[in-house]
Image 1 (cartoon, rainbow, N blue to C red):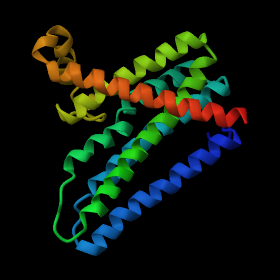
Image 2: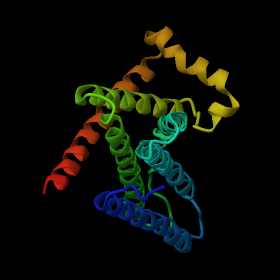
Image 3: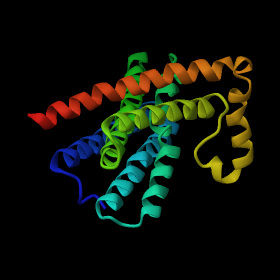
Length: 222
């Protein structure tokens, strides 16, 4: 399903895969060093951060092959549901503190590496979806859609970090997730953290995507 990628995108994807190996190696070396799997959860979170790329690649591949529109939409919806998992790793920095047995600087770079990688994975998948959407929409509408996706991802991070829901729970507890998701819209003043966190993260994610998108475009024009 990845044979539709151009050489530049394939190379970027390879670099992302190599950086994944680097991040996992940091956790592995820390385990050998201390005998404790303190940050083992980051590997699972990084696996989830790859899910948006899986679904955006499937959606883009199906779209370019003019395959079933229903399948393309299904993959796009799955992408949107899993998109928050990529930048979510940034919020794992809340676990950063000095720990015995390993230099503090090592944990700083370990967690910063995972946070940076999560953002890179998310922005790459957004670039794929943006390219697909741009084939069906005018540029301004496509950018507006990406802004809405950024807001959705930011709100998803709130649901995951603060309310502790994850992407899988939508299959097990759809009603409760729907209720929790709607509460800030019904009474935003009673859910100030949800509103502020969503605004701050939305600007951060969309602004970050704008910067990386400009870089991708500059590389393409060379």
